[in-house]
Image (cartoon, rainbow, N blue to C red):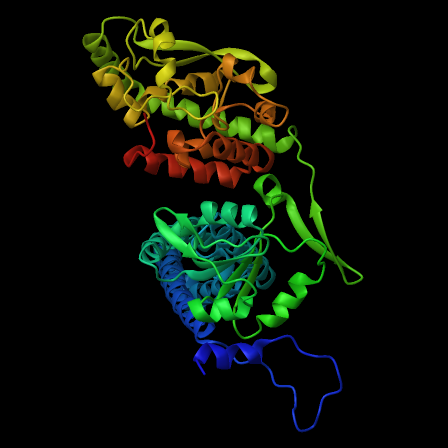
Length: 508
């Protein structure tokens, strides 16, 4: 009998008959895959804990040193332990809050903005508590901690977490520090999940196998790698044990089987560390969903999106500040680019084109000209060679693009003048891609939701693959952004855009 055959029977569903004293119920033991996952998670948390401790201690000590230079000798004479007690108390409270707010939880490791938000939140709460305590006990020295340790420490903590995240992504690209995952569900849903996650190592899910509930298929090909599928009737626990999986991702459940998830969770006890449920509703409503239990009944709440209010006013303020800084900083380089454009292909430096903005209002978008002057008149003869997705027209080797224009497009420098459109209110720094009027005429009722907010210079389409994305994927990303944007997500997209400009992909 194989090791799998010995393991799987012990993981079958419990029976609810009377328990025999000769066969007492025993808690299932963790499998080797689960123990391996727990080890790497524990190792990564230790590294984060050490990094946090070093950063917090350094920030508090430096703040104390500044306080020493500004503190009157008489105060130190009265309380010589002042400069020791203050940084020590600050560091202890700060580190405790970082732990209590779960800034090192496995669920936020390596992906999303929640980790950074929790670090910032824990830091703010820690210094709020310290300020109250210092005022209550009339301790001296909190001012330096607030004005130095708080901002400097927060920046250093976020920078350290970013460095660790990049290290984790590199490990995951090599197949380490990832959740070995089996995807379960109907064929269409399994294919959708695999295509979304299978080629994205940095997301932390290394798909090793699948189980299809409604069809008999041999396997799936993802980015040139074949994903094996369990045989018909084979239990999920057996598949997980055979492929050393520690995570089961349920893409869908059998029709009419309302207890499937509960029974699957029981079956997997000891075999897997996580049971993850995927839902198509999360494509657009993910951040707006929350789970609430009422009298034992789990209820999934989906908050209806709004497109007005204080958050959008703040977004507009951020747009004005960022666009003004960008235009001022780029002004010296704009002159050089303008001269290069004119020399390469005589004609206007800027290219203006009608685009559709919020609520269907048209505006004139401005860019550095990257094509020949008569490019628009040449479009008709190139339509048969279109490589774009959906209603978009794209050519990887467009003959109309000039030599300077190719460089500008590769590094997205042709889009810099759009900051003027942002400043005057036609566009936003972050948002959906600004469509052409001809594209909008082909929109259905769903796609037209992209026009609920202002289009952006950058956005999920820009950092998610650009022209390499399918039309359906670009629409999904834009709709998800429209309904779930936040200031933190905008900042994150801006940062990712800067990296994409340095290492461009899908730009043509």
